[in-house]
Image (cartoon, rainbow, N blue to C red; front, side, top):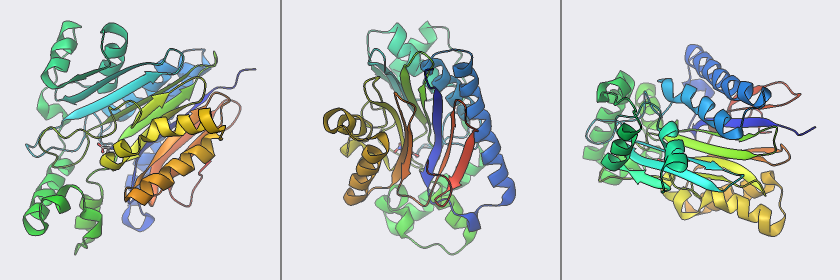
Length: 330
Ligand code: ASP
């Protein structure tokens, strides 16, 4: 019988037991389990990997807990600026959107770019004009904004004043803060991106990623998430991958394609390839993680940050949800 299943992430970063309340932890675990179940149900009834990826990511985009869709981080202008991408491992078709402000589920628009346009990536206003031409509802900016993200932006701006532009957007984990609350706000600045990699009963792979990017981002900054080969990649011959982490490094290391390439050219297992790529990111000075599944249903969940919100469900096995570094890695 063809194996099938999926693996998901809700962002990697400084996620520590002693800084997480039991209530918040329970909320994360519940939402991850719900997202996983949404995708698994699709696969279980014979649906496609692509459908499973969008169904899973939609749950996390609609939850304010994650940095995607509703509850995404705010850019320097105080609005959510969303990126997403998706790839079909069977056809190597791909779609992506960057810098959209009014799309409830950016992963769906990325899928429509792939399936209904002649392009792979649409950015900004043009992407939204394309969405309108397909009848998408334009959500008000207020739909996406949460109080938590507003506080975070305030902190980021304060930090920018006291420690300079780089500290606010990039170097925050190297600065020590005085209160646990401040620490928590700061550590969540750029984490919480969501992603999914799935293998369906037809033997096809797909992957997708959706994010708000990094708090206080400016100048139209785009990270790895909407970039095919960096944040997302899928190829039936190798694997499906979604990444999360410090996007600048993930772009430079071509993370998602690098994992696939090691499998294709060197015959590595998905887990060895993912571990080698994350080690490369670490050498460059970046942090974060990836989830991946290969065409035989082997998975990888590799990260060099203290934690990564993650979960997987393979046919015939129980679903597994994990958050901290000392929990299930496979
Ligand atoms: N990789 C995303 C970005 O740099 C952020 C994240 O994964 O949380 O935009």
